[in-house]
Length: 258
Length: 378
Image (cartoon, rainbow over all chains, first blue to last red; front, side, top):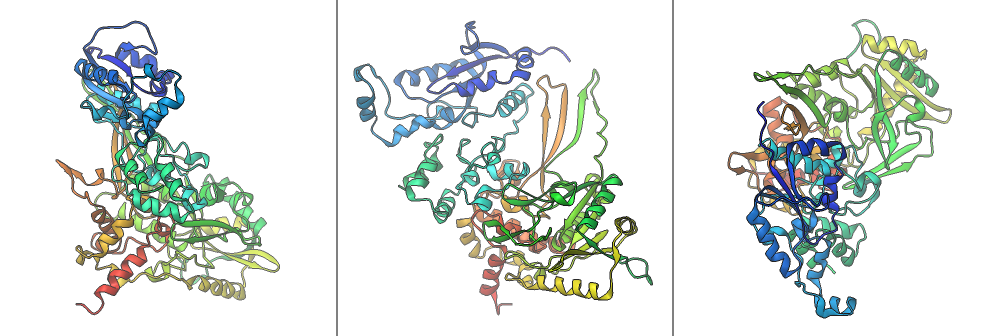
């Protein structure tokens, strides 16, 4: 086959912990093969070498939390043919979106000795709230297998195999015995998108909802059941208010409990 | 199936050491023994080697959205009712590679398929599960498009059935006509007899390969009294607290606008658990994967569920966007239109969809509600 031109890849960071970018570096076995297929043009976590835009694919990590972010993401969009957001911060605002439910002014006053240096928005929001996004890859952090699949699909001009159904389907395929049914453990699996590889449920924990709401989440039915299992309204609220607190379905459900 | 006419089927009494001998004989013939064992707070069907792997003294309590193991206080090995997932996992695995291909200068070539794994011996198949295996054999076989994977695995398999001697709270095989007695298709059938003197097994062979293995296990011949006691023990499993209104369930296709669909939709999470644990649900999706260069491709078949949006995706969008239409599709196909397609119901009354539905939606209760509301109507 004729050599195809290597697309230029950029990796951007907004408000985030860097864990999702690390997932790319964590593709140890596949990283060399990947660099043969794409040209890493901008990836500060991996290299100081920077190539100017425009870029064929941009991976965007992190949420929008400052006025500077708002401007920067528009520039990234302008420079990118395809923009793929990676991780719960970029797709839903991340754990830092907990600020959306409280007074940010109060936080700043409590935490910083010199609040006057802090220039921040009152909310943490998803990239797609600010610019158009071509594909959203969920997870806190993302799964490196899904990241490779998305890049792979992009390179080969096909649709990525990233299902939007519940985590339960993945659990059953993996032969995991349901924690909620067999042990009474509160679990967000039925309303959470699959993709993590049953990380928590495979280790006798309930699902924390890292991959955000599944395609048609019936959070009210799950919340009612969690209460039958003994959760208080506050417990239910806290379950829905974590890494994907600002994802619409989880945010709305959390607002009805407390 | 009974042995040749005129000769009584071979029936022997085994103790647990004898049962272990039977497992050894099966493994010695090259079968991979899959059977019940305890893992993650449940009885699951997995690789087993000896009787020591089996769930001794373990019972279970099941109800809608609830499963707990219970100590029975005896030495029974098959004292539970049904495992968390059925035999579909091994006969029709959740992920199956259909083929792989390599790019060549002029096109592509298909790689030869890997040799199939060792044949399976399924140890502890219940009546409902035997029925489910037969239902899937029909789905994957007796029409125009036989599935070589399923048929190959089933053909090579040795089936050791175990009669139930009690029903769980979510069981309703009696009303589906699929139990409590094990129907056809097994090689060896066991009835576990738990008595003061210990635990014994009345083992009956139904096929030649079953008979050969039973002979190797060296049990003492079963007397008439043993067989009568075994038959009596099985009768106890017919006491079931749930039942399916089969006359109504077969006609669900006639009530697509019933108000009940909205009620169940309020509780249904479309998580798909019911379809995953159902021993007859057979739907799959196909995924093509490539390597980064695009020179190597694989096609995989994966379990899918009619509860996902993508399941009903056709050009332009999904046609079952509402929860009610997805639940209705599942239950109507399972109980009603399955008759049109395969000449029988797709439900065997194992109750897994009730137990493993996180919110305990009960297929028999949904049908009963529709039954009650349509009573007396023509």
